[in-house]
Image (cartoon, rainbow, N blue to C red; front, side, top):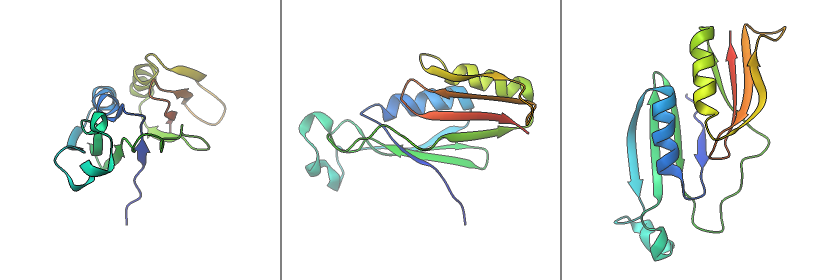
Length: 133
């Protein structure tokens, strides 16, 4: 069994996945648009270029996402994507990369429970926690 996050975006899924690929490494292994799919009929014409399904693989980690039809998107709340790393410098680098044009909720620092930790909301309104084990 594998538990993977599935993140919804407000029409920015393609840009978000390109951003995450740049920040985290890995590879986008799926990027399907509404256009040309059976779901094309369920969205307005201006939405057919948006993402029906995307998949990013970073090592053994997978995150998936899409742009729900207009009126169905909700800003993420009550959750965060959590990255656990073993290297402080790499974690700090990823933290600052993800924070680009976002909001830092807790600066990356060395709290009592971890070698490094920080919280942010990225430019796509997705909350993140970066932790060094």
